[in-house]
Length: 100
Image (cartoon, rainbow, N blue to C red):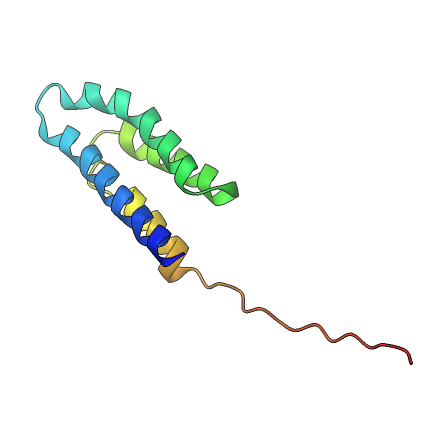
């Protein structure tokens, strides 16, 4: 599980870097964002399943398509939310009474 977690972080950093590189390229960069935004959204939904993955894919799409927002590391922030900031519920024991 730990290896998978850090592989997600590595992929996220790479995807964030790709998104930021398009901002650096003059004139062509905004057009590359039009291509990159749906790809990034699809990758986000593959990386994080369920409701949170769908919300994150919409957010990464908007972040990539809107001008001057490429500096936001959305993939890395999603990883931090999933594995660092979000509290995982502690498992609770359920007591079962058996009639004897």
